[in-house]
Image (tube, rainbow, N blue to C red; front, side, top):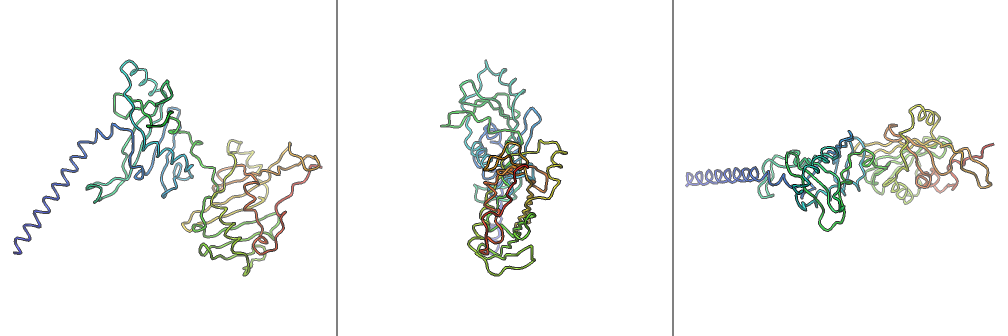
Length: 363
């Protein structure tokens, strides 16, 4: 009986091995067919996307964690644009092959003006009917070129790497072309987000008011409803404060954005504008070790006036800021930042509404 069980076990193993070999052979045999389509049905498995055009622009979009993609490994990408690109990859469908008459012309245009797209996915060396998945690894599964739109603006010319024939590709039900969604320009993917941290991800928040140090504070987050508040000017723990106001305040860090880039200014000019003491210094630390430091500076103006019509020396609506460890120089609006420019008195009940700098008229 024991011998019979061993024979059954061996036979089962052999049959399983044969099934695996047949499946892998089937996958290998149908590879060409799959690679001749542009769509990526399972976009959840996409780990990164590389885009490069003929003008030496290139970007690498890489998933850091679900719902958060990075640009060139270190910067936050515009999530809405990444989501739209993934949706586009999922829905792409071949409308028809380019005609013989137009073939040479289209190929020539693709050679001169197109975006190379490389799609990398998490795949498995063994995948039995999507039930048993073993040995995961990242693999480049598609490379194709995206050209311009068709004359009727309802399709986009695309060519799979290694293929001879280009196709007109579109999204069923969508009237338009998709070439603009495959931009390789850095500025099209760089997020304007400064802070994007849910309360549950925040470990501590420090706000320094250099022009009025008595307003400075630090909040330490124990959990989403338990906090510690410190008065930085007195290096003192504050026992009594409004927890609801702390929650409302920290919620503002879930989506805080700047208005525009100023990196195009000469380095010497940026150094001059940031040479003085910052107005505000904000440091947010997350539990996973991520940190964002923001320093803001007054923005000079020659066009703004006060309530009496007198010219102001500094812009009352905007200020400069350095973000990403000082690597980027941007403009932010007080309209956006006022929701986080709260003094410690806001939480303790000793709060003056006019807490931020009041800019004086030019004498």
